[in-house]
Image (cartoon, rainbow, N blue to C red; front, side, top):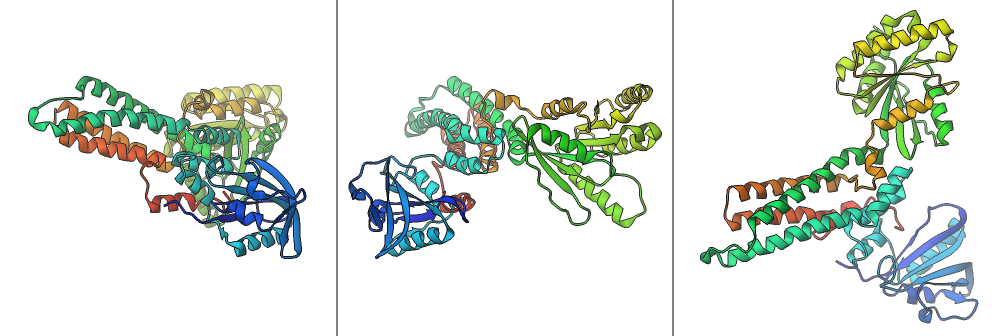
Length: 471
């Protein structure tokens, strides 16, 4: 499966820039690049030491393409375990293409998506879960996703899986050995010790599986649906959060009814706020479509944030309480955060009435949290951020625990746990060693799928097709 040819690709984003990096990897990488490189110090690229940088020119026949810096890494001490040359050239798209085309004419092949990391995996520089973490690291947009990707790329998750597999494999070997002496009715594997091991493996698998609920939403950004009529202060509130955290905002236009999505970061965790149409009974066909879409967004959300203007609440509390109860009745298990906004517009007497309404809301719907906020002045914004974070299990991040974010890993863990439970049941029922060995092999198989000890061409193709070219 390990390719022998030499590949080349642009490792930096395409387009104009100050510099660009072109990566070449393969047994003949240094030899091929040496044919087009002229060192200003007359060095022979084929004899230089590994992990060194060299200044010179890329020459095509008698024409100079660019003045470049070459970084030389000799295998196996390189990213791919092969010889690698990285060419740092000026960031002109014309220069980039001229150098790549020149190297292709000299014998290189343009790399496929993720092929450098694929070669690193095939050559034993990293396991499959670490290779997948490389893509997650590139895609990380906040502190939490970066931290999870780095932890997995360093092998934290892999080491746990390898340890589980190794311990299970040791007992599997003893079970298999019993099959060779089946006529003598001997037991090499201590059943009590084996049962204790299965319990430990089961608990570890359950912990990793449970972490996926947190890891999946962190990786994608925690979706929060904002329900509220126009002009209740949604944009002002988002700007208050945004300015506080200096995050990036993106606007995505919907189709049936404009839906605005704002992405912000709060203490390293990404949140996706989805602005929706207000919920109410209406005969307007278009508005009903918008409200239907609102319910779809609520279904997808981790938290529902209902924004109510304090002055409007004082004027018509029944209208807003009806809206809140409607949402709660449709999604009784969904966390709902009720925000009374624009409290700065109220007089002292009105604020006292608002506090009474807050107590009334909590009494009628005890599962709902109620906050008093002024998005314009910033009052209550810090409390809002803390409350939003409380809905997410950030303790896993703080304690640097392994968090599963990859659905492929999650499915493999579920299948492994299922097989472990079969082994436990077989141990209780004292089934024969040959039947127990079948379930043990299946558990080992699914654990091996995670780290890549067991792979197929289709699996590798699906994983690395999602990588960017040059990585």
